[in-house]
Image (tube, rainbow, N blue to C red; front, side, top):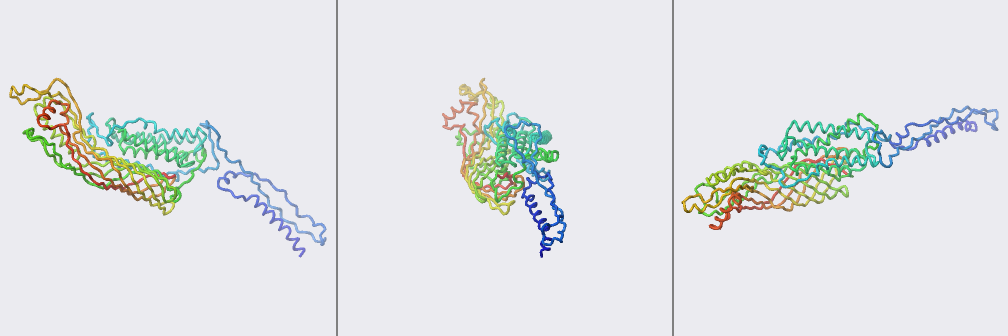
Length: 597
C-alpha cells in the first residue's frame, strides 16, 4: 500500500497542477472580450523535477518512479479595452477602429424598405389623372390642397438630421463610424440619390402642381430629407438610441408634407422621394461596408431585429386607399328671379338641377405614432390627409361655362366684357384629420403582432370649387334709353374693370370623428417593420353648395345691381345655397412602414 501511494503521488501532482492552470486560464469571456484578448503572451512555468530519490523513505532500497513533466501554463495578458474619444473630435481624416465591433455584411444589413415606398409613390401618381389641367394657361390653378400656405422652412429642414449627425460626431459622441468611414458612406449615399432623383426627374418630366416646371417626380427635397434622416438612423439611432431615428424621420416626414402644402409637389412625388432617400443610404452604406470591412467601426447595432413583445412603440408612415360613401346629392336651389326679369334667352334663372357628386376611391397618406407603457396598451395619435376625387366635376364645370357664355351673348355684355376664364380650383375633396387615443398590441411572437386602437379627433375638409374671372368696360345706366325707345339701358363706359368670383363651391363643416382599426405587424430588421391595416372612421358633416353665376355683375355694373334691387327687391349678386347633412362611413386599407423604439 505504501508503494501504491508513492506511485500515485506524481499523478496527484499532475492533476492538481492542471486544475490550477484551468482555474487561471478559463475565465468566462463574452464575444467582445474574446476579440480583445486574441493575442496572449506565453510564459513557461519552471518544470518540477520528480526524478530524485525519495529521501528518508522506510524502504530505502526502493526508487520512486520518474514522473512526466508538468503542463506548460499559458498566462493571458489582455489588451487594454477600447477607450472612446473624450471631448471634441476633430480627427476628420484619421482612421480609428474599435476592435470589439464586427464587420457588417451587405445582404444582412439591407432592409430594402425604400423600394415599397418608391412604388407607393408610383401608385399614387394615378390620383393626378382626375385633374383637368391646362398648364399653357397661366390663370389655371388646380391644386390638391387649396389655401394660402407658404413657407420656405422646408428648404432648411431637409438638412437638419445630417447637421445633427455631424454635430454629434464633432462633440465626440461616437456613433457607428469614424470620420473617414462616415464621410465615405455619406458621399456614396448622396451620389446614388442624386443619380436616381435627377435621372427620373428629367426622364419622367412630371409637371409640378403649380405648373412652374416639369421636374416634379420624385421630390428632391424629400429625398434629401430622408437621406439625412437615414444617415442619422444608421449612425446613432441603431447604435445608441432609437429616439434619434424617431426624431429624424418625423422631421423628414414634415419636410415632405410642407412640399405638398407649398403646392410644389404631389403626394406621389413625396412618397417616391422618401423611398429613394432611404434606399440610397442603404446602398451607400452597404457598398462602403464592403470596402472598409471592419476598419473604422466604433459601435455595432443595439439590436438587429425588433422584438414586438418588448418594444411595440412605433412611428410610422402609411399609405392606403379610401372607400365608403359613393355619392353626395345636394338639393336644387332657386334664385327667386322675378318673373319680369326672365327674358327670352332661355337661360336657367329659376330652379337649378340637383347637384349629384360621385366619389371615387380616395388616396390616404398619414403619419402615426404610439408609445406603449406595457407590451399590450399604449397611447398615441395619427395625422392623415385623404384626397377623394369627384367623378365628372370637370365635365360639370365645362357645361356651366358653356351655359354662362350663352347668358353673356347679350349685345350689351359683348360690348363690355373682353374676356371670361373659368378655373377649376380643385376637383378633389381633401380631408385633414387628427386623432388621439388608446392603442392595443397582441404579440403572437417577437416578429408578429395584432394591433387595434380607439381614437377620437377632428376632421377638416377642403372645398371643391370653380372660379371665374372677367375683364372689360364698366356698364353704366343710360337714361337716354327712355327717350329713344332703346333697349340699351346700360352702355359701356371708358372705365376698365376686372374681377374674380366663386362661380360654384361645395364645402363641408368641420366635425368630430371617431375611429378604430385592425393591423398586422411584421418585424423586419434594423428597427423597421411592415404593417397591413384596415381603419374605420365615422363622422357627420353638413355639406353646403353655393351657386353664384351673377357674381361678376357686382363690379361690372353697380348701376344694374342697384336699379334691379330698387325695382324688384332682388339682389342678383347673392349666391343661392343648398345644404344637406350626411353621415360618413369611411374605410382605409393600406400599408405602413414603422420604426420601433
